[in-house]
Image 1 (cartoon, rainbow, N blue to C red):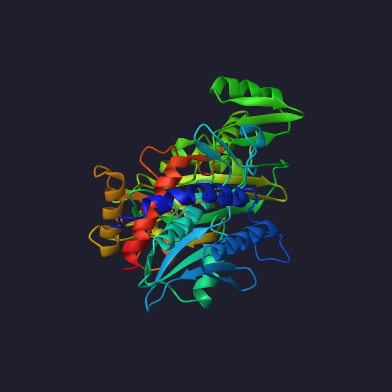
Image 2: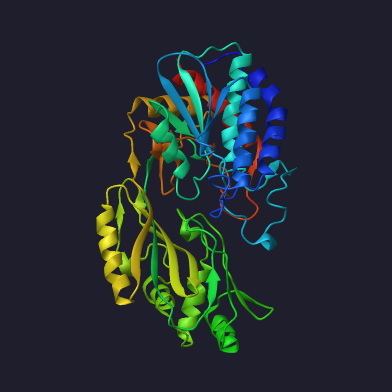
Length: 447
């Protein structure tokens, strides 16, 4: 382990927070209608800002394929080591649920607030400054180190896919986009749509993203008095607003839907109960309900490494078509085909057509893998925490993109997880400690 790095890390704290705040102020949310850039001007601005920052820290940078991705290199040697982060963020959601402006970062009470503080701008920039501290300490790298910046991780991974098609693939690495000590297995991620022609006459939408539990759903159709009475009976929170009723849920990441309250599910349950039906409404109300594991559809699906299947109805759209956008996290030993077969059977009963939107295969590295042993030893040495064990996750990080890669921090066992939620924040001291862990980890894996 390095002996002379602490003061150099301390010197990076103020410039790190300044650089991070500038990046957090860019609302880098995926724009599906972008014309001049692959994923939207704001995302492109975030990429250019990060590449400019990396260049100022001593990296050689590359703006790839007209803005599909970027990377920053340092060091020499035959072998390439990767640090894979992403600069896009999920939408802010309902601004009323934020105590601060999501894209106007603020430091208060020892935390930094803003969309992207945890996921994933905060840790990605921390790792960049960790390298700066290593350079200032006189460290030379015996392998090439490349920071790969993806910019549509929260949607379809077109950015990292384009990188893999065109660029050198690292032999190993980590993604600073999850929890410490590290994540050695990630569930399969299946995102799908169930669609049908809308013959119900109903028109409404709810939810913002596949991978977020919807914290609100608005209904402005008929029978509002009956609906509010049923919501009272069911104990579902709601608000009467101009022309309609807003169901109040609780946001959470789709990898842990049990930590949220799905407003779409509650609206469908209540509508069905008062006789307002459609194929999508009936599917949610009868087959999913408020069950984050969808056991009516699948039964008890789980395995020893990664636990239960997770199922999240992230969006509903009733226009000319009825569309349900669903995120499913599949345990690593369960075949995707088994899940799809069961879902197809139930969807057919409701005259809903299945289409796959995205699929990310699971990853599973053994605990005696050299990379895992190295990164775990670094975490334990820096933090003194030898009790917390490596974990598995339902999340989907860029660790899946290259061989011999795991998700590594930034969240510690004590950190409150706020990614994909209103008031996303992280303790500044956690970011400083993560920077220290990343410095020692990068030193070790580039020896």
